[in-house]
Image (tube, helix red, strand yellow):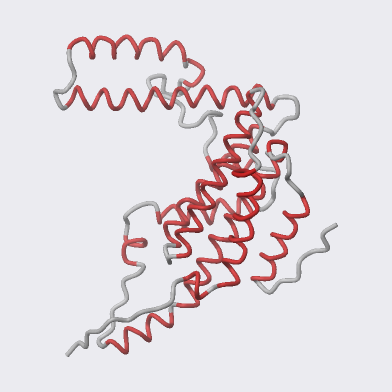
Amino acid sequence: MIEKGPITFKSAKERYPDLFAITEFVIRQLHEWIDRAGIPAPRNAIECVLHACTVRAYNLYRSINNLLETDHWEDGGILARSMFELVLNLEEIQREPGKEEKRARKYMRFNYLQQYLQTNAIQQYKQKTGRSSASDSARHGQLQKIARSLFSEFVDPKRKSEWQKSWCGKSVHSLAKDSKDAMRYHHYKIMYSFFSELSHSGPLPVMHNLILGETTEETKQLLEGQVDREREHTALVLSLSTIWLLEVLMRGKDMIPDFDLKWNLEVMKMLFQCYDVEPPPFP
């Protein structure tokens, strides 16, 4: 006979105070620098991109933290992948000194293409469901012709009827391989061999938290045995997200007037301490 009864555990935030001391330290400081002090208005394309990426990284990090605190590290991992791609895109924009402005403009133009593609998909859906008028369909056809001319630089060179999947014509895999950071490809393999699975509804994310014992006591023992794994995954998402956030901030530091490099080093020291690793001799 299966015994039934509630099994309760403290939240991840309560179980791992050393980990969440890091996110609290980071978010509190960025709140002062970004929310309270403010970011200056951008004056050109590269500053627009850096401004937007800085805010995007800050918002992603807060969302990841909220998920981790409440034991949703799998969903936090999905957002961490977005942070990783943000770093890769910034690397590509700033790859060659003197070409940042040109690449930033291209990055922004691709944004307009993506907005068009979203509008196009919605209009096609309206037509398919019989909710589009004849005049709407006519305007849609004209817009499609204009888009092919306006965004011709993003037409897929191999499949002329399709658009490129990225603003630079490179996949995430290619960006990671081309990175000057020796660890970037290792990060990629973590992101796309494990975390990518979490963004789909395959067996791994669906079945991960299903733990069933024959009795309440057996189920509790199984849950307690998973604690170490839960900390490992939580620490992985938290540490990688923090590292990538710091990289975005370093690349966009000119958009944060009060930014202090010493603060970055303090955050890194806290990460090393969580893994019981002696930090390198920071200058």
